[in-house]
Length: 90
Image 1 (cartoon, rainbow, N blue to C red):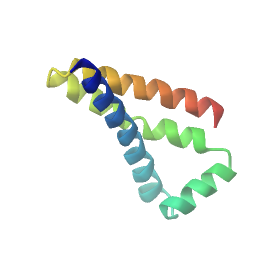
Image 2: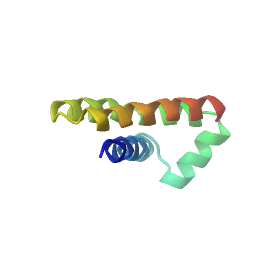
Image 3: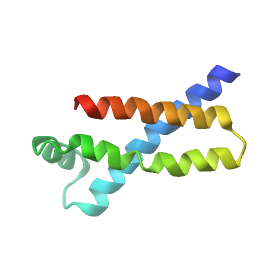
Image 4: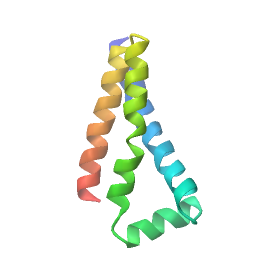
C-alpha cells in the first residue's frame, strides 16, 4: 500500500503542475494552450512556466498533510523535485 500511495502522490503532483501551467497560459496570456507553450519555448521561458505551474503543488501538499496522507504528500514532493530537474534541462 505504501508504494501505491507514493505513486498516487507523484501522479497528483504531475497533474497539479500541468493544471498550473494550463491555468497560467489560459488566464495570463492571449494564446491558446498549445500556441502558448510553443511561444514560451521559443522565448526560452518554458522552464519558468513549469516552475510557475508547480506552485499548485504547495497547496496540494498542505491539503494532503491536513488529511493525514503523508505518503501521498511525499509523492507530491518527489514530483516537484523531478519537475525541478526537468526545468534545469529545458
